[in-house]
Image (cartoon, rainbow, N blue to C red; front, side, top):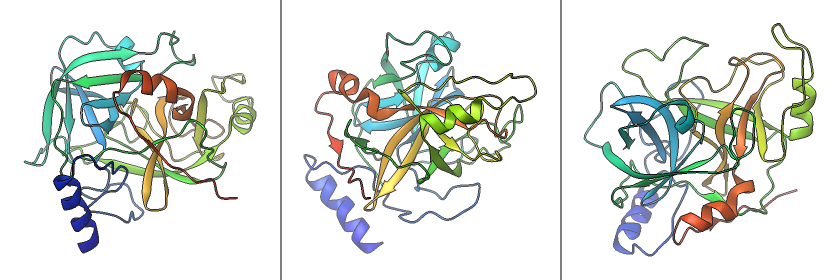
Length: 281
């Protein structure tokens, strides 16, 4: 913990340093549903008129990445982003709520299951990083994430299909396994009650979950992060996009694959730096 604290103090003293994906307060994650305070300092809550509707990830001092469908599904008239939150029903002094100045959605997005389910939110002012508010690493477009790698999804979404997270709405975490597009299409082709089966996964998507189901993102988690760790840093691998119900067998969660949008992100976020992911065979 001491070394992490020293590193954070250096970050404050030398703002030109780029440090991403390194939680200060909780460097190690343990199993369970409720996360630890400060474990996921890039996680944000996107609100409409003060009500949580989607998640997102801080990637720079003034920029949040989320899902385009969040801004097609709701008539956003008053959007704010809350950062540094742990319990949405009991916000502490560590949390900051900032209005959104601009929303940029990928023009390819044309509804659920299409390409381009990614959005950028420009905050009205740049942030000062704290132990509770830090960016996640954005991987280089060439980064490869192996199938079967254990990663994590976080959010304040429903704990079951149409079952909201109970008060005080503590940030949840779930460990899931990466599934490549071919394997995911095989799973989606298996008929399921209410679904005859199809192969809907595109090369701009990545799946995560388990063949037997049971662990997944759900309603209200949309736009939030799917992150994987390497060399003590966390990388934003996916953005919660869509799924059939929640946690069904043969229906893993589907995420926007962030590496497919590296050039798009770089176009809009000034000085965005990519974290280095080393593919280890």
